[in-house]
Image (tube, rainbow, N blue to C red):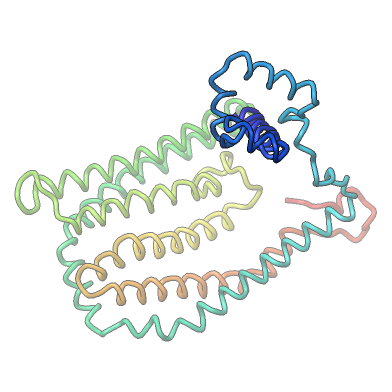
Length: 329
């Protein structure tokens, strides 16, 4: 299409030049030569022989193709050295950190205005919601704790079996423990749904608050399943991290607490406040939850920084050149 347009413009230029280059005497003597350039162009287009001859002349004149007419103007990218690449990476990291710091400072400065959305009636709304959800919460948690008790016994057996087996057997038992833990959560979640549909309210119907709680329970407990897979507090031989049982239990309890606060807060409490109080109250509650989790995480890091550093460095022997002086887990 672009080539045809170029040919058309060149033909138009040639015909206009031919029409305007006639001598004045000839133009006055022959009225046929005074026709407009448009009429001449129409004659050339309608005549197949003339059109073919014009195209051949244009080709003979050396009209460049589309691929030949495109001349790259940008120079090829230079082969960056290792030092330059490191500088670019560090520059990007510094800029990202600066952006994150600016965003955090902006949010902290905006926190008092966000907290103004709390009106003081949020506690009463949450108490009413918890009273409405009491039976569903009790039934779901009871089913989960019973199944979880059987699961811990099964995890202990899997751990003993993995301790006496090879790598392939350990991997299979690890996957089996993951599936078992997830099935426990799904069964408890289904039990809560059955209780809400069959025993509470009208038969076959479930309230929006019950749905919010059950969905939050499913997502939060599935997140805790992922934490238990990494730390495995009940199965030492299935633990992928080389940490002792006490540390695994400690970390699992604290991380699960953070997951529970964030999950139930954002998926249950905030939606209830949004629908029953105001969106400003929900936004303020969300900010409070974020600040509480941040302070909890900072406290855990400051409290355990020496223990973690000692674990990372490992026990140091008196002979630093001894092979036993390397990292020990």
